[in-house]
Image (cartoon, rainbow, N blue to C red; front, side, top):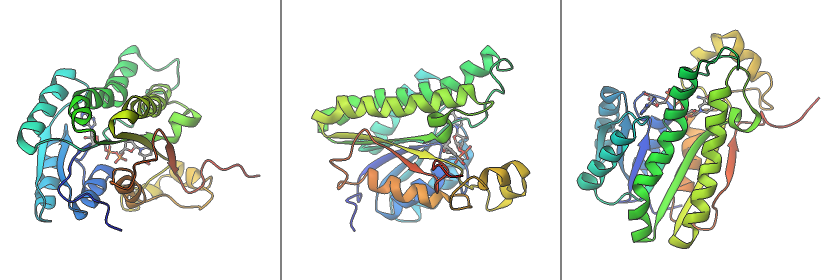
Length: 254
Ligand SMILES: NC(=O)c1ccc[n+]([C@@H]2O[C@H](COP(=O)([O-])OP(=O)(O)OC[C@H]3O[C@@H](n4cnc5c(N)ncnc54)[C@H](O)[C@@H]3O)[C@@H](O)[C@H]2O)c1
């Protein structure tokens, strides 16, 4: 199927680590012909990925943005719009994954720091790209969430609250964007191996995998394939949805 992504401009946040979600999503969009702004606070990592994508025949550039800072997102978005042109697609993937520990152990600083990156950041990006999407009556937004945002996460009060927040944020963007050709959805992940198998050396991850109905971790490509569809031209009547990519980690059994 032709996803209609050829020549579309996409921002993928959190595109700084080889083999991680942002990298795989960016590569999948580029393979469909989309130009990609690779945004990360890890600028060197983003540069290497942008270089790789450029070799695929699309325009790809790295942008150094700490999305916990509104001014940086504002400037970053303006720079991307000036250098790459109108942005059709936003994938809010960047996040800090560490929780702050149990509720009583989470410091106010840990709480605020993570919320600023994982919840404020995605809102800043949507806010800064919104007007030009409305003006062009076209936009595709995907927020990346976690099972912790749906079921809570032990020792992850800050992370789970932020990840619940991005689901509601996408739903609100879907409602407000519906009359402007903007669709917004969330992809919620269970456990995805971005380590090339090394993570399974950890006993904790083995315990988690034992709870997955499919008894294995997901791969970044499982997420990227869905992301490519959700930002495609064909995805014009699916909006405000939260789609779980987790091999049945959320299914009840006994
Ligand atoms: N890997 C999993 O099992 C899993 C499970 C559930 C949800 N997720 C979600 O998937 C997404 C990607 O996760 P990943 O596993 O690829 O992790 P990752 O840590 O490799 O990727 C996150 C990226 O975000 C960047 N980043 C962090 N803080 C930033 C900031 N302030 N400004 C800009 N960029 C910043 C990091 O540098 C990194 O490149 C995240 O939203 C995460 O919450 C992952």
